Structures are given as C-alpha cells and as structure tokens.
Length: 190
Image 1 (cartoon, rainbow, N blue to C red):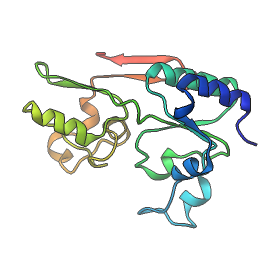
Image 2 (cartoon, one colour):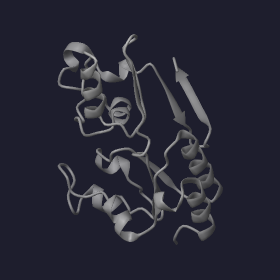
Image 3 (cartoon, rainbow, N blue to C red):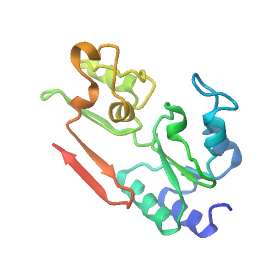
Image 4 (cartoon, rainbow, N blue to C red):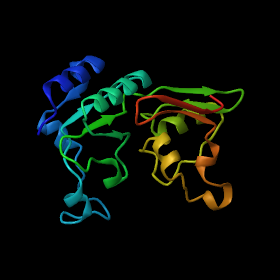
C-alpha cells in the first residue's frame, strides 16, 4: 500500500514539489545498507524498509506541519539528519516517510557568550570551522565531523576525549523538539 495521493498532496503543499519525492531511485538512495556491523543478510537488511517517500523541510514549522499531516493520514515517518547511525535512522514499516532535515542548516555563533545555535542539518565540521574563525573550539563527538552536530550530541555525544572533558550532551543549553503529535517543546535556555 503506497502513501495515499491525498496525503502526498498535503505533504507536497507544505514543502513544495521540489522537496518531496516518491521516486524509487531517491527512496532507495536512503536505504540501510552494509556498513561496519551491518551485513546483507543481517539486521539492517532484514528489518529496515525502503521509504515510501522522502520529504525535506526547511523550518521547524514545516516539520510540525509534516508530523501533523502524517498523523492525520496515518503515515509512519522517521526523522533523518545525516543517516550516520545505521538501522536506527530507517523505517521499519512499508511506505514510511523519511523526514530529511538537511535543509535545516542555520548556524549562529554568539562570540561574546561563546555559544552556538544550530539546526540538525549542520555537520560538526561546519560548526568547528566557524568556531575556529572566532578563536573558539568544539569537541567533535565520536560520530565524526561529517555527521549532524545535533544528532551526535543528543544521540551518543561521546568522543575520544570524553574521559577528560565529559560528554558533549552536557553542553547542550536548550532545544526545540517537535513532539510525535506535532506540538513544539522548548526546553533549556532558548
């Protein structure tokens, strides 16, 4: 059973036709494949499914609208940031939508108070480069510099230096989180 035309049209109206696709080639590009601990016959291949569609919001408000539309039309969804962590980032049911957050790439640094505001599409190397331009430094978590700084911070947050300086999730001062019902939770000092 594919995503209903009505649901697809509603989702398309949120982000525009250029930022949603159900083309099998696009969906297959997001598949979970062999990499490290995964094998062709193992957990990743047998449990995860190829998405029914990919949608790429630009703002938190668009994410909220997408989640609410998915709930209204009973369309399963999975948020995706950089897809680094294998099977945890993929759908486990047929015709789910991957909400790819890569277009959410705003990055602001407050030089005076030494903090950054980042969206999920910002990777660690981008934040590190901007921090270094200001004489600042960040600890890049164990996921590496190519992964979302937000996903790595809230997901694992460890680093080879964690034994000396603590884990990076302790440095998060606040966040906005879209809840499963589409409502927004703001926590911390934001």
